[in-house]
Amino acid sequence: MDKKIQIGVMGPDESEYPEEDEMKKRMAETAEQLGKLIAKNNAILLTGGCGGVMLAASKGAKEAGGITVGSPGRIRNASNRYVDIEIITDIDAGSFIFAGLLGCDAIIFIPGGAGTLAELCFAYRNKKKCIIMKGYDQFYDKLVNGYLDRGKSIKLLGAETCGDAIRLAIEK
Picture 1 (cartoon, rainbow, N blue to C red):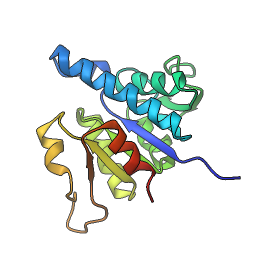
Picture 2 (picture 1 turned 120 degrees about the vertical axis):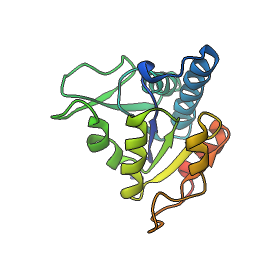
Picture 3 (picture 1 turned 135 degrees about the vertical axis):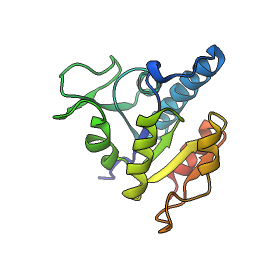
């Protein structure tokens, strides 16, 4: 039996969305499209399982017939309604870093706040393939094709489109 690739989508919760309505809408649409493409490529979606980017990606994956996994923290049934499998942890904040991120074969980042940046750093340290969606944040855009340390563990990849991000996530 071939194992399915597991792709994470990281990004802000609604409370961390930018103030501009157009950017909020763009982030949600991008996350939903990523979820759909993950499902259409017979991969499993992993997220923190809550709102914002996590909800939009999970919705997209479910609507395309995919499998969704969420790790919302310590409370059972705290995930959004599109999560199939819920992983409960003994911590709340940052629970996805420990429960879900290490299970990902690749992770697509929609730039967000400190939580998203922490996930990017943890993924980098664990040599996970990291793909940053470009055009959302100048700070994150500057990281593309670079490294987070002198050890140059992995090169951070960038994608302009959802299709490019999925292609990068799936290719070996």
